[in-house]
Length: 334
Ligand SMILES: [Zn+2]
Ligand SMILES: [Zn+2]
Image 1 (cartoon, rainbow, N blue to C red):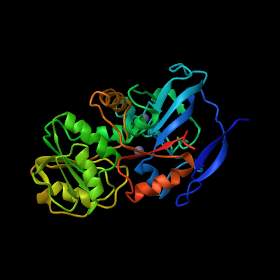
Image 2: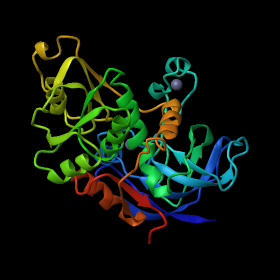
Image 3: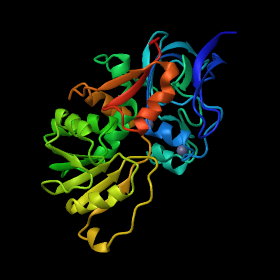
Image 4: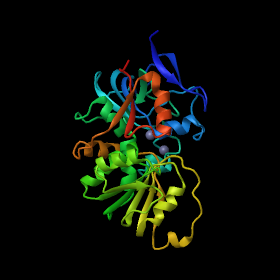
């Protein structure tokens, strides 16, 4: 019996710990991947903190997985052994519910989310349904491409929901998704206004280096009004702040899976056709579009790497805003 190292979550609020697990065997449509890198995401923190309440337990977290195919299940024929693929948050759908039938598989009634309903990528090996894997652009190393798989493509879905009439774009919460989407927006000729935790000058300087027009505290108003705002921080009051900063017809898009309560506000702030909306998960089409676009921009990811054993520390540093850009677990790092 072959075993592997994996970081395990036994229960919400308990720290991840290293364990030896059996290397799993691929089911009919699955591939077995030798993991090389896996991005760290705010959603992992929400699972750790019990804010997403239905994880499989014990659980291997991680849903921005880069790995190579080492074995395919009996009905899996899409990839050859040795091929590099990416695994995102959407690990499977029922394919039959009303949402799947109308091209909204991101809203599937019976989804299987990677690193939540099924084990994810903070391990030496993982399984994935080959139909939900992506081929990855060659221009990126394993560590560089990992953050594109959630920060990048859910960030991209969030960005698309802002619509086409956007000259000035606000981004609240300047972490992994924001640093990627700023580059995409600049490439489209849009001006980006970046908002960070009050006093976080390091993140503000980072935003300016990514091409932001202006960066400041989230308590401030931008120097000009916004056509749209994207919110990547799980902080409800930012919705009101962003609404206040938008033009008539402006769109505020919430990109996270969990957020603290949104305070009440006068209707006048929403009046004049302003819109607040959320974004949930991703479709495979989002992933294919974004992974084709990223090397054209070209999006460059700013990555802080951690060895597998330090996946828990990576999550705590993410919580505390202790690094800029994206955190990635590099399985080959000793
Ligand atoms: Zn994520
Ligand atoms: Zn469905």
